[in-house]
Image 1 (tube, rainbow, N blue to C red):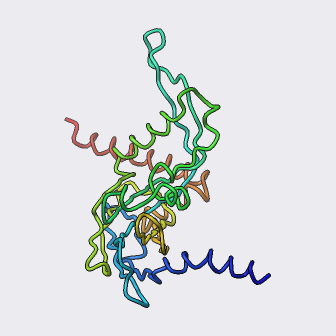
Image 2 (tube, helix red, strand yellow):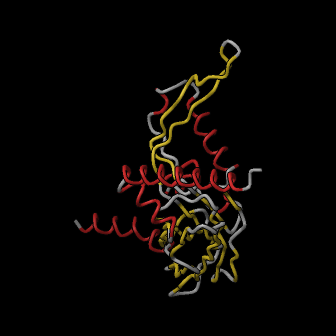
Length: 255
């Protein structure tokens, strides 16, 4: 029994020795975003510091990774092929879950900041954030559909990777800005901050950003979902009144 306890202590001692006792303390410039008629995007400042109970260990430097993830859901990706001279949907796959918005910002080159093992464990990079389990049976060359989704949403500004975008001062203070596009999906956005050393995640912290419609947009959105019949009748009535008013106005100026 004593030998077993000693062996367990010896096995655990390297992990304890490598633990630098570093923690993240972070904050956001704003925790909510209101989508109004004049909303054209927002910029979130993410800042913080590395809290230490002892001097940092020698060898290897601390790095910071920040991710901002929007509400996720299933996505259908279709491929168009030219059949008999006409472009048609020829194949499609159903991706289990994909974030509507995903931004990754790092303090250095991603290959040096994060290891493949910890990326797989924490789902940090964009490919890992997209859950596409089981799509291989949906269509041939199914990975191409996932790549197409990443490419399209990157071109739309919904997915982004910015290496070196986190300013890290004296291995302690950090800050970065993440821009939210104008076409935002309403919901809770998750901000994750990772502290790494030699590619290994040693601490992580989460924050939330609430994105909600406000004002007239909120009223119209709720009306369309809560009372669809009344909303449709009201839309028809407004359209009819607008048409009648326009006709009456042009009739007055007709010679």
